[in-house]
Image 1 (cartoon, protein in one colour):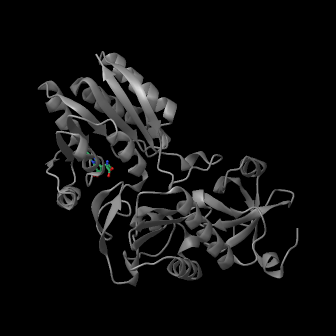
Image 2 (cartoon, rainbow, N blue to C red; image 1 turned 135 degrees about the vertical axis):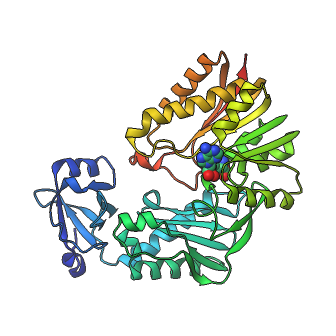
Length: 397
Ligand code: SAH
């Protein structure tokens, strides 16, 4: 393997046989507990990774603070990091150009899944929203390279950064405010599957919208009918897609700011909808005991299992929601039920749903078992990149 002087100059981190095996399986993370030596690397620096005998395993980004100490960036030596960043961004854009249709809002860079660990870039029409999750991606040189490449390749009004203060704290990075990195525009309108949404880059959750559900909105709208209830609706992603095919659509969420945006969206689409601010667990309990009935129900709660330890409690939460929704669906009804917890795997989620159907004396036929939209790619050898489940099922009594 040719070694340039720059590569030679990279600090070397030696990892244990267990860490090396993980990389050989195709994973891209090494935990701190698998580092044998070379931990003195500068926070966020590029490092050469070797096994215990000194055999090169590739080049990685180092974090002095995260439990994930090493995130691989290449199997090869890297002589020119900015050039690699530019190439990776070009590849990420090309993937979307080939595979993403019917939308001007989508995830342009999805961290590990686009070989740019720690960087997220979402496009909302002519506004880009960036999230930096690691020490390495926070470096000035990296930021400048990423912004200049995106600006050259796209026709943009502005680029903003959304900061998660908890992430910066975990990465031992100094506090930083969310805001504009380039341009002036902070709000716009975007269109996905022909449905228009208001976007304010400095408000809301995630980078503004749940782009990972984009294809599931369109899939679910094929079967939605009659009276529909969108539970945990946020700004109304499912609800707005259902408006043309349902007689009445109600969205429920506990967050008032989300509902304020949701309320502006129907006017963009000339639809009349109903929004309810409520705790979904309480509302479903009230509605199911008072025999309210619907033809279509969506359940899209926040991640109940943030860690493996939360799994049992999470499954109880999912089961309660699903059981109540099943009782409220008329025969021939459609259940759209989601989980964005990585720790709840697809088979576990389906088992929970089978239990709920059995306890609720309902029969479920699976129409579609879906995941996250294609702009949130799944790396086959990195299971953590697959997190969203969306099951669409037909209810019989
Ligand atoms: N379906 C939405 C995304 C839902 S994210 C979309 O496609 O855009 C989950 C939402 O549920 C968040 O907005 C969160 O604020 C809200 N939420 C969290 N706990 C809740 C609860 N107990 N009752 C109602 N809403 C809740």
